[in-house]
Length: 218
Image (tube, rainbow, N blue to C red; front, side, top):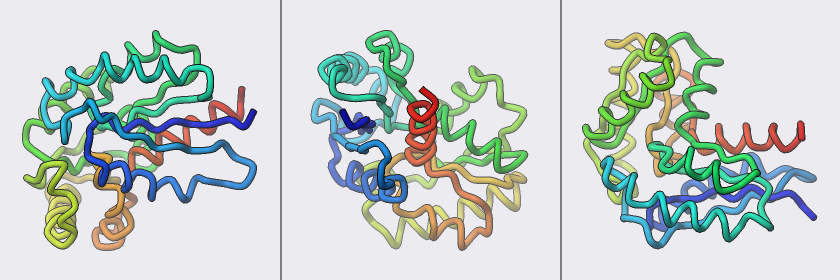
């Protein structure tokens, strides 16, 4: 049976899933695992608060259980990593959270990472996670662009704010690598990297790349 990685968008915004799916093209290699991106229709339009994040944990874990026999690995494609530890209890297959993987990947590309977030409540939530991981000494900063998940389709407006925020993280906070703090930002990675002249980690790519390595190494 061909190995497969199921990438789960826990929000119900299909445009976000489409952006994630497009980012996966670089990882769809001949002979490699199939990469399937799915939308949790039970989820909120965007995961923008701790309540939003917590609300999807049970449906997410239930979905992973239904796919346990036909998937080789799972990726939770939300930068809050909702239900990550609970999901790992539901399956023997690898379960990766995109935030955890993005932070780990960023630390291989620079000394101090900066996160481009969507909203101010996201910044606080990310800060808790960084402290829980024990990597706050490597964090240069986390700044919000002031736009929610659904608004990320407004390309010109979003890109301008992301570039402005990325430059502030670089020039004012000292970041030498950036992380996109929402899976729905995937389409803007290359443009932000070019404009800011820093490496930019796209979290879903980071998580799927790690999942591929896990499958390759057995």
